[in-house]
Image (cartoon, rainbow, N blue to C red; front, top):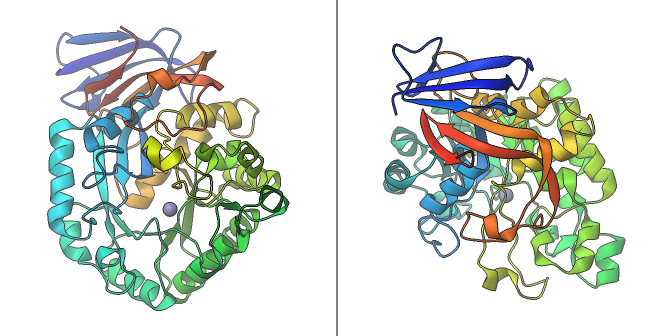
Length: 419
Ligand SMILES: [Zn+2]
């Protein structure tokens, strides 16, 4: 499709009716001829396509959970036009051949842009630095050992120094492993349920280590999925004194709490774990004052056999592409915590600027990435509609406002429930 015109939609920031033109994959002021496709967005709001800087597509190696085709379809359904996939695949994405394989597959069968994140250490072993330069040439946008933290302060220091030579952002999963053996947040509820707990300080100690290392080197660091009040406060103070730290959170940390674990439903089991109501409110506060830069899904598909077991044995993680925008809209914009524009910034331009992706707005000349959503009516999220191969969502059966209706990535319609 060469020329697309989207008319009668409401601009997400200005609230005004707009006509959006896309030609040859990019936004243009006007079309050079008659449109090949006219999309009537009457009653809908027009957004830039969403960017998820933290997800797990599971390919190569774990295709029984998800693959690039199903994962990007699921992403497109959630309004995402770009996703960044973590390297904890099998084989690990720690060399150029795996990076190239992911990009080739995404090109062939993907429903959105895929930007691979390379491993910070070889095989995620926490010992030797990976071949970042070669991976960057192949197309990675960042490095991380996600799933695990970058194991030691010594390794982190080397990773930050080496990555900065290639201008590669470093993303760290913050968890001090020596005090982190548990199935849920440590506190009164874990005790009453008889489950081993993961204390908030497991996250906070590692955030402190990362910030002090980045500050010492005067180099940037990005903290993955923050979930605790104290962790957010540590980041807030570091930002105030000029440390080059950025961070992200996930929809579940501002919409759910540890109390959900009382159901023993393993779709409430993730890492970091759901925290207390005080932490949940601190996440919202962090988003409001800009301490938290991005909302990411941490989309982590697991097979039913890995979830439909005892709570303490079940795998960590939930799927997240298809509900992220609706959870954000319902829990942040509707109650008035964030404006629509502020919410969208955390899911477009902020991740784009941290990872230097050069997209995330509706400006002319930018890649033609669009999401249309209905903000006027509620819907119930059902298991039947899930496009991910895995169904491990804690939100099934819940009502939301903010349904994605159509997604266009680079001028190609990738999801459409309008026709
Ligand atoms: Zn993680």
